Length: 195
Image (cartoon, rainbow, N blue to C red; front, side, top):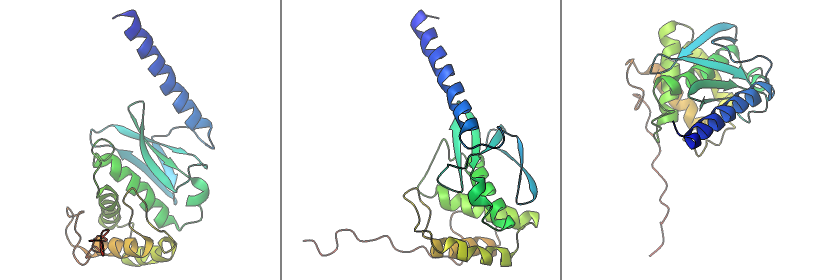
């Protein structure tokens, strides 16, 4: 190994260690965990490679939760302050949504439908495990109503709530792309009226 390559590798290793340390200190009440209690449930996650996904609390996250890769380690970050304002089952839904990103490989192969697929996967997982009922999914709507959606692919709140319910009602376990009973809105026509 050349001296330059060795320096680059040492620098990258140091940066990764600093990133993990910063994550652990930035509002975290606990360090990286393989199992975490959310909404009264003991939860764990594995990615599509079978690797353990670690979880950490970060109150300055700016969102409820997020999935990320740090130094090749799959991580779910959770904003405990925001989670604590939600019903227990919705907290578990958000954890399962982020886990779905890892399980479906979205961190390595993102698509325009990744957010919708993670939503549907999390809803169907809750239905399959018996930890999520239709009334629970209906109860998510007021919490989602104020969301405008995101540039990353989250639907605006009312549409997202409709799609989550369609995912729950869709009898298929595998169909996470196009749940029966949900018709996505037509994309906006950006050049309408220009000639």
